[in-house]
Amino acid sequence: MRIPDLVWGSSEIAYCTPGVGKTTLGKELATRVGATYINVGDLAKEGELYEGFDEEYECPILDEDRVIDELEDKMNEGGVIVDYHGCDFFPERWFHIVFVLRTENSFLYDRLESRGYKGKKLQDNIQCEIFQTIYEEAMSSYKEEIVHQLPSNTPEDLERNLDQIIQWIEQWMKDNN
Ligand code: DAT
Image 1 (tube, protein in one colour):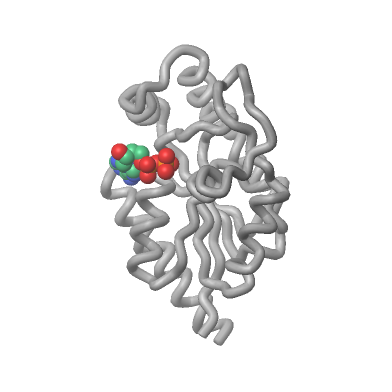
Image 2: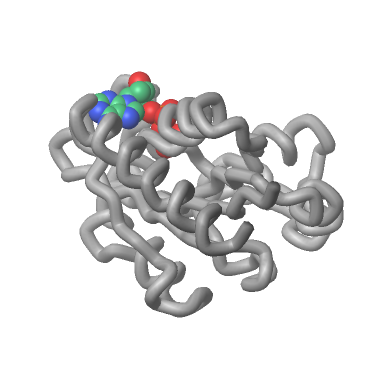
């Protein structure tokens, strides 16, 4: 039985964690549909898949080629949910659908602040959301019809997103099995 491969990006720049709800949604979805959840940030940390350090943002720089090598076998198995804040460096063929979670500034501000973000890092991440940076990156890296924005402000949004994605997966499986 084939399960589709999914990815989602979010509003974030540099290599920080933004709090739009990727992990929450990704893990819950994986549990409900029996998919494999992969958090690229954690994978990079475990394998030290870095190629330097960004002094401005005080965080390591992802070695994208090594991340792709590391993921290739898992992607071939199928049914994978990949969680990362960017998606332009993954091979286009890997994914059947791409979700970009969107969080309104006031919610995002509170979530980032509660994670200890401040100053430039906080402002830049909020600005990234205002300018739809990640959505545009996704639209230019994948076929536009497979890129979807999902609101991620409230727990109700989370449930609605789960329901919609599960419906889409069920339809995909009917069409492809
Ligand atoms: P990310 O993985 O994008 O960094 P997360 O899943 O860790 O984000 O979520 C960040 C925080 O926001 C966490 O405390 C859970 C909360 N959260 C996630 N999705 C939410 C939603 N739809 N409504 C309200 N809070 C949400």
